[in-house]
Length: 281
Image (tube, rainbow, N blue to C red; front, side, top):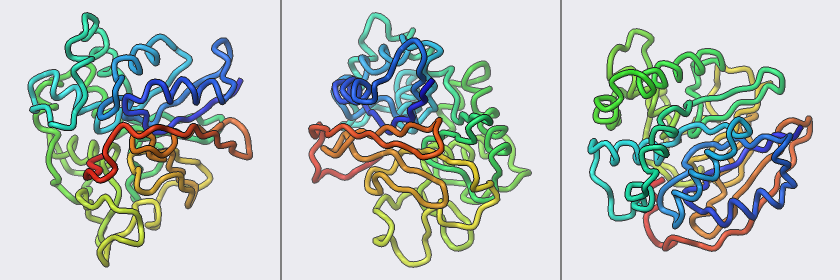
């Protein structure tokens, strides 16, 4: 059995199918793990969702910020943006089926056997792997069975910026969601800085990529994430970014993660967005 982790697809269905063929993926035995942002900005989000749904137990997908945005727009909790390309889902006859499936997906997934995990944006430095899983489950519970419509209204915002175990209610859920689906940089005090999207080396002084900060998680675990197209394929402190900018004319990247020496496979992508636009990922 082979397990392949795949970076942000964002509706780039043709590139996804080419990449999967390139990996030699076998439906009967192999697994595909997706690092979130299956949808939006690309041309065929509905086709991507249907394909991953049809994989059944052969696929694992964590939610990204664009996936949550789709749920918020679909439930009237947020207005669609000009750059969104969600109509093929929202207007589809099987729209409700796709949305309900997406709402059931986790925000974090791990394998103790291989000591690997996937998350869309990252892991807060003071959280262990097991703590991250437990906190992700708090959000998952609300999305799956709780007052998810209110959550989709309350999840937006950059505050609180600091983690406190005593955080409660929507503030607690918002912070957890921001870490798992939006985080890139922290300031020197550990506060989330969610508006900086440039690659490391171009950020203002005093801000640090989350993966470079001294952390509580055991670095014997490999953490696969996406969300950061300006960073691209990157490996530091056993945190591996797989978002290599397919949407922007870069590559769609997969990593075989069930073997000691990782294997990376990439598919060159045709840009579906104007590269001069602001990369609001």
